[in-house]
Image 1 (cartoon, helix red, strand yellow):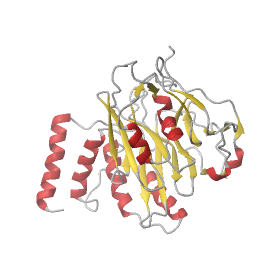
Image 2 (tube, one colour; image 1 turned 180 degrees about the horizontal axis):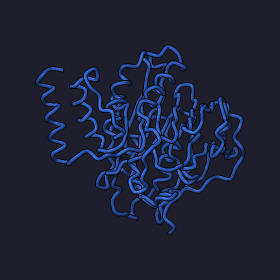
Image 3 (cartoon, helix red, strand yellow; image 1 turned 180 degrees about the vertical axis):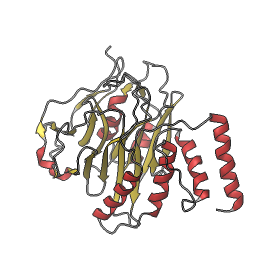
Image 4 (tube, helix red, strand yellow; image 1 turned 60 degrees about the vertical axis):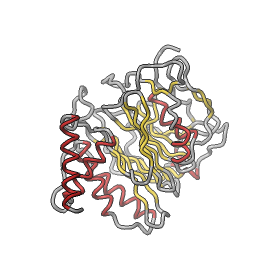
Length: 356
């Protein structure tokens, strides 16, 4: 980068800090998309960072399921078009998942998220079902962006389960088999979308436009000289961006997965200090990864020495097929391909306001 560009980037970051104040020490999750040069290998990795166990299980959800937005009055309603495998939080919400078309959706923490005061004239979607709506209805990122960019729905907050009762301040990411990417953030009650392959990395605070500017500064410094090393979201964004660019071009699916997992482990947060009143200070409790082309969904618990994976091609997503669950809570000895270990189960209920 030229000196004038480096000066501009540095000045821009300083201006952002002066305007917005210190960058929040926000944690809770990282996401990285990696695509081979020939486009044949596309993998997205994600870390879940939280201060307590969110009791995650894997679920097989077929097509044709009747859905309700779980948002109280004027909740959105739909029938799922695509089947998916999802990772839940407390079995009341979809935190992460991959659908049968190769679309991955992720839910991450964002302290600045603001869904606006509830307007019951707009169809509502609870935070708990928003990611599932994306998986149910869209095959590609472009399709989802086109449908959602008119801000047709309002995200509705309700207390998170567990010991915290923290409000669900969240943003969402999408990636697909073409290597496309999108970040959805709700700021001052309005949807802001960053769409394109130039947005492969996502962490948490500050808002995505500020993350891009901060990362531009560190790119001008150059990672060979210095990289920020704390667990803060802005630092993890910089490290993930830097190391993703250094990854060798994968020649196989295994190499692509190894590439991504090496970066996800670099931006993981070790067990240590936690504070229920500050969910932004949290260790990595699990990781997921999606092979978008082969349609394989990987899950790794920090409590387990082994990774498990699900091959979506082995599952029955036909309308009317059974909903199935793979219990992960306390089941740390699972290893390898667990596609055949799902057990028929009553569907879980998405969390939302108690009023109808």
